[in-house]
Image 1 (cartoon, one colour):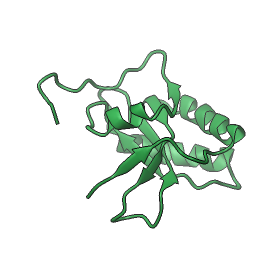
Image 2 (tube, rainbow, N blue to C red):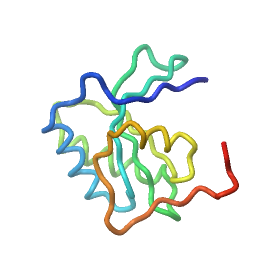
Image 3 (cartoon, rainbow, N blue to C red):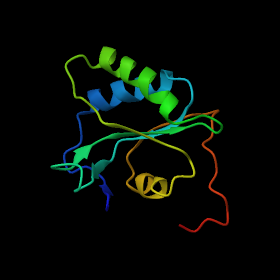
Length: 121
């Protein structure tokens, strides 16, 4: 199941990205966040800009989604409806996500877990 990740051709307007970054920075446990274009042809009709959140070391990525979605709904009541993709620092796709240059938040204190040096995949 291939996934295509890149910089969005038509990114959300700056006020939307700023609002999302503000929400992300207020949710406890997020080490970094990115908003790349994401396409999984087997699961999606077309590519869309998504919110990838990377949890801090020692946390489960799924634990961040509900509080994040609640605050995003309050901050952006008229949309857009963002697909939130939680990740760990050791996820193999994170290098590609970071490579898009679409980072919107990096915690000054929290760090994502490191990928073991021996994992090449």
